[in-house]
Length: 323
Image 1 (cartoon, rainbow, N blue to C red):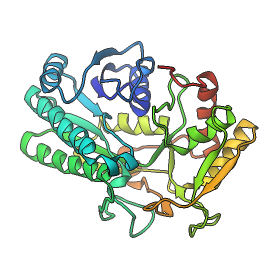
Image 2: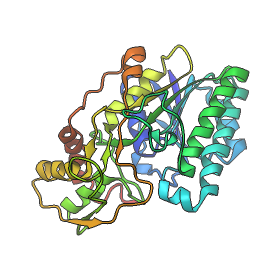
Image 3: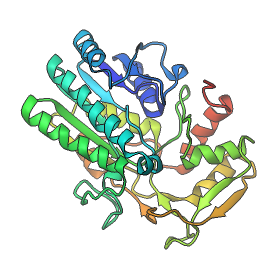
């Protein structure tokens, strides 16, 4: 298939593009490089540098490329920033997303795979989170993703643009080529590994008195390769659908740090801080629906295996992509 990967220079998009190319698909990457990296663009892909807010360029790209499907990863995704600057999140994640799907409808591109988030659910009423869990986002980031999911439903009904929306929490790990390098790094695993590399003095743990076995928050970590495989499987979905992605188990902050110590063999200093407002004690998703309907089979169920792949990449690229 011919796939346009929007946001393909970012963490998840780069690995998805790599796996698509490995499987023989033709890939074009559209990215403004504000969050992504030129060095994260697979050399086998065609690269178009552009921004989704440039409606004319988006329309020109879609009409010229005429892809079989679009994978959309080009969102802003920092919860804390969204609470300070909601305009940025609604403009990029909703308004710019509209530019993309309008251009798809005009060009006759009939399928989009959307990188969504479990943040659309907010603090869940029950665990694990499945697709029927009530959606009550508590920040503009989650709200913006939920808004675009609703837009997708209407564009399917009115324009026949089929979609698959994949909701997940913590992507982690790396492929042999591409890994996690955010300009503003808020994710736990890369920040812990930076301590192991000597790039940071310590890792901060926010909250140690939650109602969990060791007092720290529990989150669902999913290997980037498994995540990418879910996006590729979604290309063959016969109907529009929403799927949650997770391991169903989750790991606490302390467990992640202990696993990093085991994998790296290095000391990792911890500084305990007060809990952050709005951080739920546990966030765990179930993936039974996508396993049942699309045959998704995650390969990396072990936290150590996820962290080992990340550690190998960070050792090769201790300062990330360096741009």
